[in-house]
Image 1 (tube, rainbow, N blue to C red):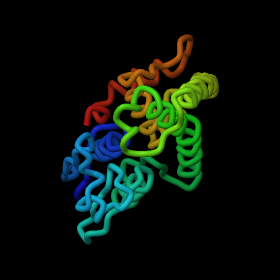
Image 2 (tube, one colour):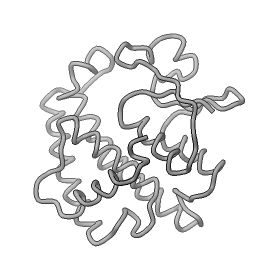
Image 3 (tube, rainbow, N blue to C red):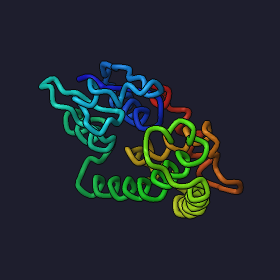
Image 4 (cartoon, rainbow, N blue to C red):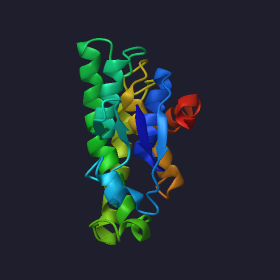
Length: 204
């Protein structure tokens, strides 16, 4: 399998997930800064032009980070990073959906319209800068709520490290480097990020 790879939090999620599985993927670099992902050659593989994309030995290409991670989990069930039974899988997917909706979506919409605007403006429609700032304000509120909900746990699902932790950790670590650090006064999330950074997979 070949992973079309680039900078950014989404490819990092798949690399981290694969590293936690002990998998070595053949990484194919794609120059998103130079617009290679918008060119005909790459869009022949993924018409959406998004990274990452996983090319199977059959030639089929799977995109979207959750779908890629679900595939890797089915092919390599151990260690279970989505869940070892139906209840665990449902819990992980519940938290992944919450993180997608309440963290990743407002972060990306806000970041692209503000700090990331010089890069993204020629490439896609964006919110106005003021709306982007509002999205980042919404993110602050959502992170504060999440911090309260997860207080006292080691990981998002308690003692069980999962895909939900990888999603949340990768996006928040990217945000910390991209002008969107954690809000002040949080109790759980700073320690969570320290635990993520201590895992070798987050450096994959």
